[in-house]
Image (cartoon, rainbow, N blue to C red):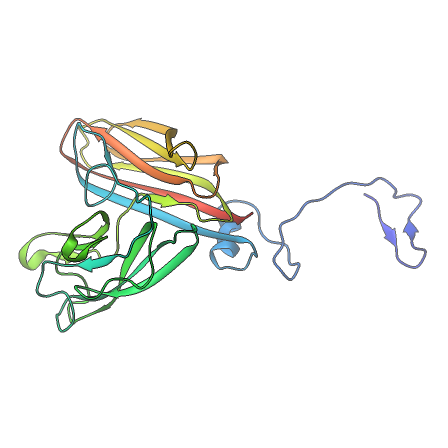
Length: 280
């Protein structure tokens, strides 16, 4: 390996063979671990300029023989074509100001220019000051003594849960055994403007061991009226299944990424996918 002599300002005669070494370093020039999951810790910690990450996860409690998006609300997800004001609604009297359940919810998404936005809204309160073209996550940021939502929280384009439903925060159990999730379960994401997404892992969970299912990692490209394509697929039986991409799947800005599935009928399904975002 070539060695540079600082005093002579030349390579040492006996060491003139050049090799190129590429390393990943933080903003201070410190080399970063580039092997295994530990290599992504600096990205998760926000220590690598121009890089960020997000894990998207979703659940559908009743996947049948009709294809559906993996999200709590059920059915095929409907994307907005123009940015809209949004509202957070609960039919439970325990949610909202003065209640023991959810009081405020932070909604994350994209504006009309596909840039990342976030706004905290009051349950059963006024609509958003910002307009959202996409919603990809929402979570409770203030609650009463219960600490979670007591009803199904609907994030939609009109008050009282009307209009287009963009997300919901559900729960599990009934009566005194009910517990609100406190966060959306949406197996979908839209790549913000000015970024490229790299999907590193995709998982599927099928709650019925005796039921097989077909799952699809679908994308909508912002060309020709948002063409829907399939980036990958898994045909799986009951249980939990993982795909790790040694070469990550690459998606351009403004691409919608969504998990859809169908099966033999009437079972819970879940899905996650991990995304590394790189500034263009």
